[in-house]
Image 1: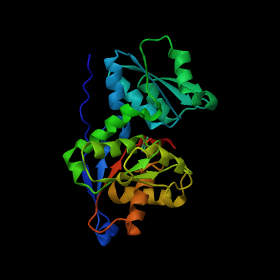
Image 2: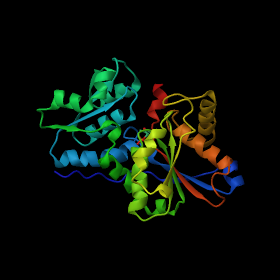
Image 3: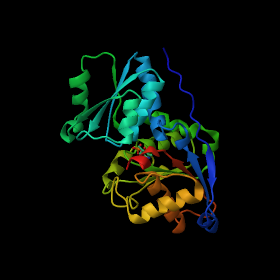
Image 4: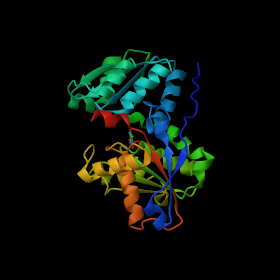
Length: 291
Ligand SMILES: *Cc1c(COP(=O)(O)O)cnc(C)c1O
């Protein structure tokens, strides 16, 4: 039976700050983090077409991959439960317990811890454990790939999203950013998509964007704050100040770096006065309670 997935609730809110006013830029935050407490932000968008494809193929079990704090594992577990699939997660590294994995288990996900070496060979893991199981559906790590990008690209169909000069988001694998660039192109928009890369030494990822128009996007590599899942004391202070002043939580892995970068770029006159900017809040709030 075809699966119907409604559009998520993800309103656009104006963000006020003295520095935005002083520099004459308008900043808005798209609250993708509101879409669902656990199928949060871009993970919801990236899962949509994987879920539809699994249902079309009459699969019963979603099989996917993630680290012990993976927002994607949790999103898949919650989505599987909501849309009548069972779920199975390969978790990178030795067995641990934490709130993310506890929630995964609560949503019925079967967790299987595998060594870092085994984890690198995801197709082999799937073949070895589910090769002869007609009910199992493979979802790539992070929900990335073409189906994931398709789901993200739909954000740019929303009329209100078409009024911005700049779309800005954090970048891990980049699946989200590619979906946004695709969405801008699909809808013939002139918005430029800016990505704040949270990994250190990831400049090589630029090659994956060669098929896009070079003027359609910009990757920023100077805001990783020490590398993936690492952060400075300054970022932590910023996270606290931002939360206490706005009521908006930003996780230290992705969204605090995104907002920190945005404010820094505005401060250094990177954007011309009059620029209308929409930053995406891509969720990840559970991670704040888990670290
Ligand atoms: C997964 C995730 C990202 C990174 O998305 P990619 O598509 O891998 O670049 C950013 N923010 C949050 C909160 C996430 O959970």
